[in-house]
Image: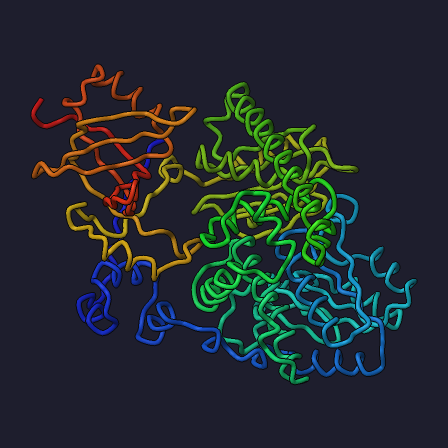
Length: 585
C-alpha cells in the first residue's frame, strides 16, 4: 500500500521548554506534536500524580448519587450493578462491586450476554432485578442511552443511578441539539454539557473509580484501599482505547506501577499464563495481551467469567479461570484469522478494490468478531469497512472507518434500510434484514464522496533525526513520555539515504530482519525490523537484483538500546521503510 510520510510542523519555543523542564528540545517537540501546550499541561504530562487529578465531586450528580447510595447502605437495601461485556464494563463492575462491598452494601451484579441481551441495560435485566427484589440499579459503562428502560425500571419502584462515559444522545431541533439525559435518579457522565468536570475523556471504569473514591472519602475509608481499583481503571483505560493524555496518562502510569505487585489475584494469574513479567509490564501488554483475554469471555462465552477471575482470591481457582480465558482468546485469534482470510478472498473474488466502502458479508462469522475483522481489513486496505454476519434474527454488522469518512452520518443516510444502528465517526454497529444487504452496499458506495487520495494512509514523523544524534541519554529521557498508546504514540523519527551493508533474517518465520546500515558519513548503525522482512528482500531482488549497494533505504524508526552479554548498543527499530535507487548508480 502506498503511504504518505508527513512531518509534524507544530510551532513552539522548544529550546525554552527544554531549559524550563530539564529535557531535550526533541522531547519538547514530541510533546507539542501531541498538543501538550502550556506550562501546567507540560508539567502534568511529565510529572502528574494522582493528587493532580480533578476532584470527583466536580462530576455532575456525584454528590446526589453518593447520598442515595449511602442511604441505601444504611437501610440495607439490595443494589444491583449492571455492567457491560467488554474489558471496560468488566473492570467498572469490579470497581463498583468491590467498593460497595467494602462499605458493607448488600450488592450483587449482572452483565448482559453479548448475543442474547445485546449492549447495556434492557427490559429483561430489569424484570430479573425486580423479581429478585432489587431496590437500586447502578449501571456502569452503559445507561446514558437507556431512557426508555430507565423509565420502566422506575415505574416498578426501583431507584436507578447511571454511571457512563459514552456520548449523550441528542435531538436535532431548529434551536440546535437538545441532550436526551435519561430520567434516572442520578446520572454521572462527564460528557453531559451541564457537567463541569474538566476532563471529558474518562472510560467507564474510571468514572466508576471516581464514584468509589468519593464514597470512600465520605465514609473515611483509607484511600490506599483504592489501589486494586486503580489497577482495574488503568487496564480499562487502555483496553477501551482511550486517549492517553491528561488524567488518563496518570491513571495508567500509576496503575501500571501498582500492577508490578498487583493485589488482584486474577490479574497476577492472567499475567502468569500469558508469560508476562509483572516487572516489565507496559500499556502494550494491557491492550494486546491482558485486555483481549478479558474481552474473549464476553465474545465467545460470558463476561461473567472475566469478572469472576478478578473477584477470585484463591490462587488455584484464579489460575484455572485465567487459563480458560487465555484459551478462549487463542480460539478467538484463530477464528479472527479465518474471518480475515475469508474477507480478503471476497474482496478479490468480488473485485471490491474499486469500491470506496467495503461491505463484506460473512454469514458464518461469529458476530462478536465482526468489529475486529473490520479493523484488520481497514488496516490493510485503508478503506472504510463493514463486516456483516448472520445474527439470531437479522443480519448484524460492525464498521471501522478512516479519516475523512463519517461512518455514523453514512448510516443515517441508509436508515430506511436498517433495523437499528449506532456509533460515531470512526466506528459503528448496525442490524438490517438480509434482503437489504445489497441495497445497503450500493447506497453507501453510490453516495460516498471519497477519492483515491483518502485511501493513502498518512504516517506521521515527529522529528527527522539522523541516528547519529541519538544517545542513550535521549533514549532514557523518552521513557518520561510513557505510557504510549492512543493519542500518545511512540516517538517516530526518520532518516533518509541509508546504505545496507549487511542483512540477515532470523526467527522461525524469517520475518525478523537484522541489518547493519551506513549513514552518509559512513557511521555504522545496528538496526532491527520485526515485520516486513520478506517484503524488503523481495523488493531488493525484484528491483535491484539483490544488490545491496544499488539501493538506499529511507526509514521511519524508533530508538532503543540493545543489551547482549552485558554490552549495551544503540539500536534502530525500523517501523516503516522505502527503497530508493542509490545515487551512485
